[in-house]
Length: 304
Image (cartoon, rainbow, N blue to C red; front, side, top):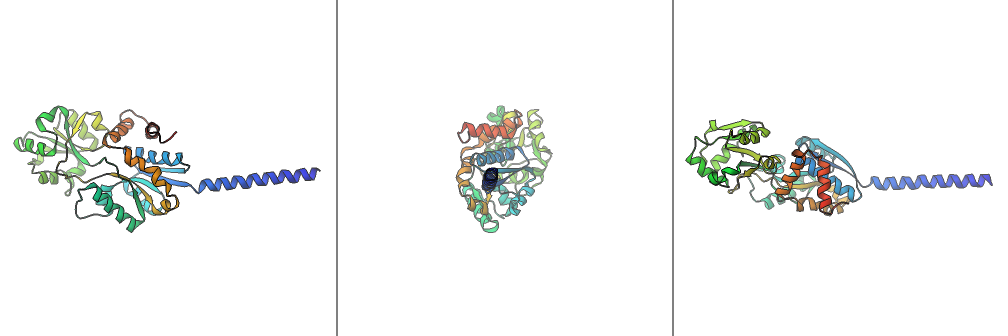
């Protein structure tokens, strides 16, 4: 009798171990690695991707905070499976298109096609917001300088000695889409000595302290809200387009085609104002990016 009970006990233990192994293996088949670059907006977007996948049964490993080139290389090599990326980065850095594509849909479709054909990457969706270079002024200067780069051009050409610009070093030096290429494109008679190169964050400080009249900014930066600046409309479409898409390895999407439906809301729901506010909650209010992403997704009813 004792031997019989022992056999039953052993059988139950073995069955439990086998069942546990099956369950564990089943969970591992839905493991995915999410990557993100090393700035606020990427941390927010990376967490949105991670949280949505976790909500839908995926076991997620996060590799956030790597430099842009390293993050892209990790995607290509298979060290990460999915990441948020920018159409403008693909255009200028990955594929080095000789011509500038001003239509956001055309650019997205071309990037999507080329990355699939050359690297087996799939671009899912496209945000309406454009995190590109921009020029901003204080809101109390709108009446004087206008709301667009064309109106600023008219003002500068009438007051060439008067207007001072703050730009980062990259925007100062870039020949293709930098400050002087922009001025030539718009017919703006900028005096070179009136353009002050400095670190990116300092451009906001400079205009806030009235040390300059116009500052180079980025289209979805939280500091736009912090310093209450007006972004001038690029009414002649000079600046490159930097819409965000979710980029995923084809191998992974083929295996889990439901991922496209899971992640599409990120590109559909976040416009310029929303992205600025999400970035501001991190940079301005000091909230962790994961909490900001979680609150946004709960508000939209996408996670519990």
